[in-house]
Image (tube, rainbow, N blue to C red):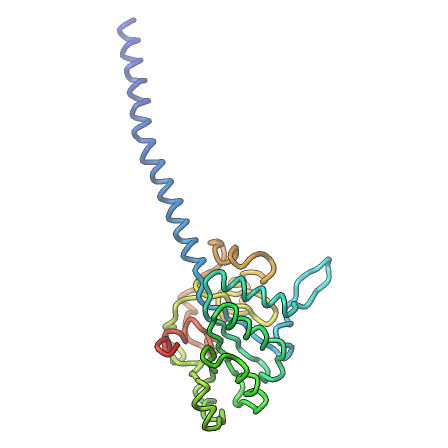
Length: 261
């Protein structure tokens, strides 16, 4: 009986030893998984582009809930959005205008702040077919070294500029890639897209699609949204093709005009 007990004890001891040996790889595997997840989170938080939509009310179209009441976003709140995006690494700020530029008064202070406080490149995506003299007066008040006018290929020839303006203003194609192709872009994971209502989507291509909605700019800090791996940071391959909704996309445009930054 004593001998049998010794054998049993030996097996138990070996079992503990083997358990310790096998426990280490499991711990390592767990650490590796945690590190990998951390790398993904860090990668998702590296933002280069802020893309916002603008209406005739400037950047005040967004709404948030305050004690049960809808409240328009103020200019100061939009300045905060720019500050947050810049803190995440954003160096491009593109605004897509759904109205004449001169009618979007509040956005000019925001553009100037992006340039002076953060050194950001500002892209003014003009959806219309022309620029008025008043529009141009607002544009020329910005730092033109860090300003780009973006327009569709068909609209470029209708933008009338004087000789001096042609020298000082840089006009880029808002749709440098043919529709129907796979986007040659740097990916939505590097971009923050905000529509005119202050809603965040994966990118402009999928604006309005519920499955790609990432919340509202004041639901929480942008850093938390960008690093949240449960949110949609990529567009499904089945619909990831160039469409007019890609016009002005900074993640796409930067790949075509990066040499002229």
